[in-house]
Image (cartoon, rainbow over all chains, first blue to last red; front, side, top):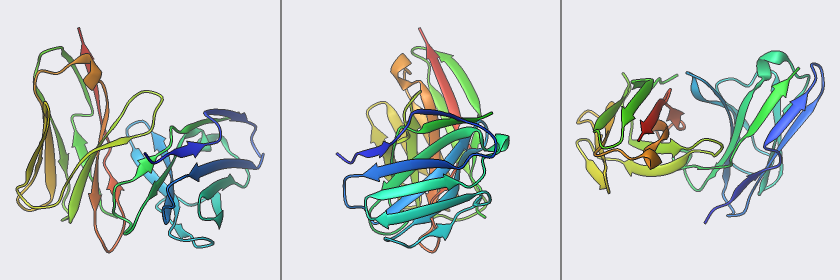
Length: 113
Length: 110
């Protein structure tokens, strides 16, 4: 089975801090994704990557950046955390074309105080 | 941006009842996926439908893709507490990426 592991289940940070969320997948998938999940809004795509060092903006990239230095690892960075970035963050990976089924981690619930 | 609207947003039913949730869009998708997300976990794929009019069954769950490939439905027969969760549809367009719906939160009580 594909395993997508997110480094933290819960995280509390302060406004203005630089925050790193890490994600690792163990199935050699080309594609990796970062979403945020808010009640009533479903999953909104922040960034995705289809290869090492490659990245594309999703629907809500503002205030975020990403890094993919190795195929199995995809990091989400909040450059200067703000309270409106309090949310559930989900990482996912998939094989082949970008619309293939995605395998998700269990999420990181991030609170910005 | 393609949008997928799911209805209802919330559903609370008793064990043994039947229910249907809907996923609608004005856009045509080449495929439609359904996921279930249980509390404290990430979404897990249930099924993928790719042909207009296609019906797939997974035990007590029946999934249908609309003829025009703009909508889909999920029907659950004789719901059980284990069906509780957030149901998400996701539309695929090969020229783009997956677009997720707004979700239906289902609560099944004894």
